[in-house]
Image (cartoon, rainbow, N blue to C red; front, side, top):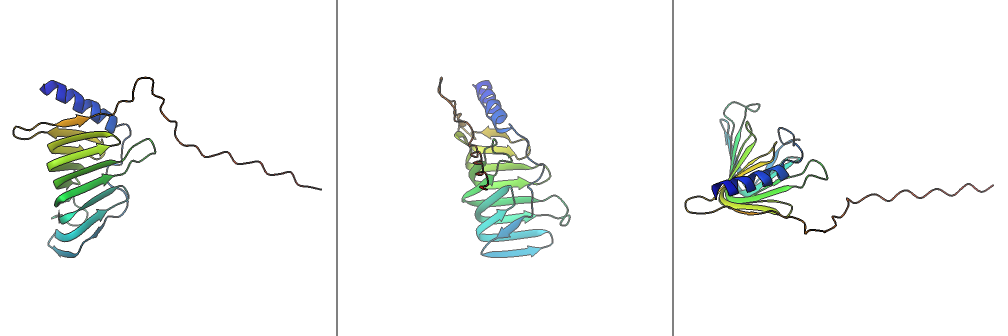
Length: 183
């Protein structure tokens, strides 16, 4: 059974890793909340917290950001909520966004790992993975899951029905030719 779960996780991870994402969330990072405190490399935000960059978004009730080495050093974000959520945008139209939720989300910038714990759920398109703990690596889009003590991992992989025709990507209509000038 353990090998079957490992195989399914590898299959799901392979689907999630179709295209490589940048090594770090791109663009500036903005954090909004009802209150915030910042002292000696520790920032604590609470109340309707939103942390957003161009490619990564975190939402929850409380966010703690630890960056003891200064603003260029690696940092760790711990987000809690009921639920805390993550949205990682796809980099290309073929790369589906990844959405996740859990009671607790920990993001480590040095390794680009996201650890979801407490009724964790991760979605990519119609593919879904649920467990007590789910780990997600942002650059590789690799997923690992654990059912916890006595629990199980639940994986749903959307496989098109045999003979189903996949819709081609939407295309822009060709521009209409301009009428010839009249003499």
